[in-house]
Image 1: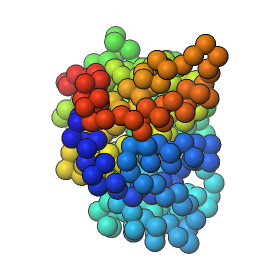
Image 2: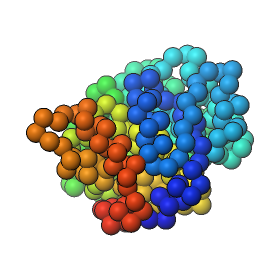
Image 3: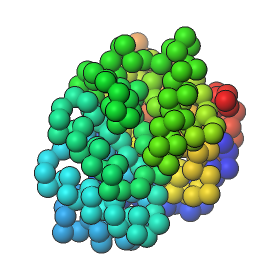
Image 4: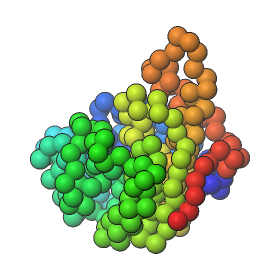
Length: 272
């Protein structure tokens, strides 16, 4: 885990984020906090040019409109052309026809290095019936110790189908290729009380994999561990009068102050 954060700080990759307006500021600050640099651009007239000067791309469908969808396709194809890694965050896939069809179109037209979402969103992309609650996972889809083995098999099969690293995040996180899975248990339940921790993680993941292009699986697992560990550290800082707004800021602070050694020591995962 240590080396993957060290590489971000050494390389400071420039990451293009086409993300949603609910969390765009937090995503930018998260990328800055880990040691990378963000650009936020979603107009069709500049996304290819912006993508070309960046080293990685993060696509998040959280607040869709027709104009932005076309910009995502243009940017994704340009990133593929330049062999830049691309992350997909299919926010709310399954909640509406537009979101679902857009995510499926992006999967068809763009080669993604990493697909990161909750279990309901990933099941939707895989063609299974999954009911999302807005942008949150349906309680019936949550990964537990009891269904963990089945969830790993599902994730590995979807990784094989998409030729991407699959990151399913929730109370228990799974990050896998078709052959190897990291089961990660970092994080705190209060992270669910903040809008955008998943969006921040996708932006963080783009930074990690861009700085570590030869180790996309491991770098993605490191990003998930780092975000969860930041949630733990931030929760320990909270005072009696602090709430979710303070907690959000403390998470970004924890990412900013996290050392490679701290990540190495605090990451809690097993490999299957």
